[in-house]
Length: 99
Length: 205
Image (cartoon, rainbow over all chains, first blue to last red; front, side, top):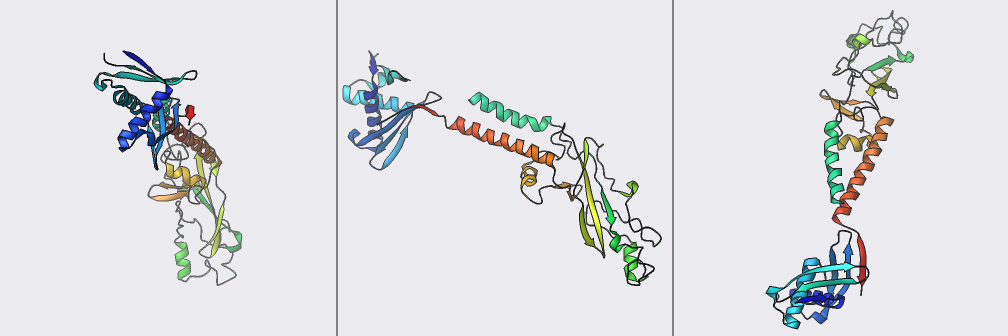
């Protein structure tokens, strides 16, 4: 099954990743910005209470996988995916699950 | 960007080996001129206080030719009263420690006048530099010489043959120092941009 994860779910994935890392709830995590640099690398700045963190493309993709596993019961071990960006559609991810 | 960074760093490493870096291409010598106000010979006949007229120890020490503290430590050629008051060290008596043939243009520093051993002496330094050899003024392009030539009062001091030689500041060296500084700043900018790429799109919440 191929999933197209939109920008909101990408943000959710970032929140889940940081929450699992800091052992807190995803609702406590605020994503301040998500950006792409000249090299094509995507990264995000997050804040959780007083803790500031930065996550790169790999961490964002891992967060998306964790979000799909925890909230949609997909099998984490059988997920592969990639993160994308363009100016028209913004940020999104293509994830292949259960295949 | 990374390819450009690699090219710049490789160029920066290769250029010093390509440059001839002949350094100081040619010897230098200083000329000593004693001023007429306090010469050796002119006072011999009239005053018993002058250096040249006395047979005391002062004369002896002077006839041994006062060794200057500069690098071209050759003695005065004259101490006799019959000679004129102006003494010049002839070419054969000048510093002959040349290690290579002279190339480029010969520059002369601003003459320095100082009081030494009872009379005034004027010292001029001569050095050679060529625009076709950018590093010929320095024996290699070291950061110490680079920074020194721009700001430090001793910057134009150059170590050679166990002594420090002062050739004086060179406008040619300033030009190449500024060019080198701009290249150095450019390298820093390239490295910074390679390590911190610019954001092309940002979405804030």
